[in-house]
Length: 221
Image (cartoon, rainbow, N blue to C red; front, side, top):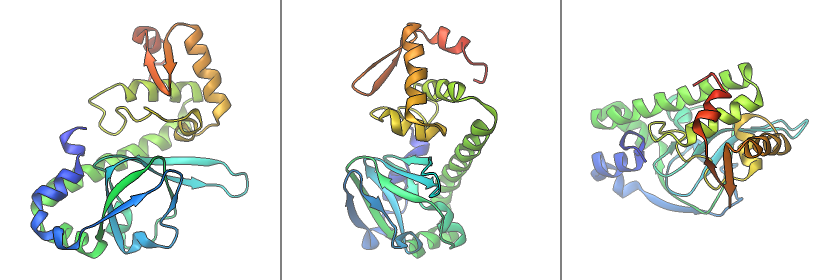
C-alpha cells in the first residue's frame, strides 16, 4: 500500500506516545454486521488487516450500494470525527478483519492539536472525498460497462492508492455493489470481455490480457 494511504503507520509512528494508552485491538468475523449500536459516535477505527465495507441499503427494493471498502491502513468514520453527527451508512466485514479502536474524542484532540497528524490525515480525508465524488459522477454519467472497465483499470494501477488491487478476491456480487448494479449484469460484461480475449479470471482474480483493447472500449481514463 502507498505510504500516503497507510494511516495505520501514521497513527502508530507520529503519535504513538499519545494513543497507545487508549488503543484497543478488535476482531470482526467475515459477514458480521458492524457498529449498528452507534459505536462510531464514540470510537474511531483503523484497519490493521482485512476488509470492511460501508454501504447504503434501500429497504424498499433491497438495492445496495457500496460506498467504500476499507483495507489495511484505512481509518473511519472520518465524517463523524469531524462533525460529531451519526453517519447514515452500514458496515460489514468482507473477510476476517483486525482493527484498532480509539476513543473518538482522543482522535479529535489530535486533529485540533497535532500538526504531524494533520499532515497525513487531511490529504487522506481529501482522497476519501474524491473517491465519493467519483462514485457519484460515475453512477450519474457512465454505463455499467464503462464503470466496470474503469474499475478494472484502476484496480491494476499502483498509483491509484484507493483502488489498486481493490477487487482482488471480491465476488461478482460485491463488484456489482461497487459500481451500482447487480451480479448478473457484471457477469454479462465480464463474459463479453473474456470472449474478446481481453481478460481472464481464476479464483476471483481478474487478469487483463490485452490492456490496449480494454482502453479502446472506454474513453474515460
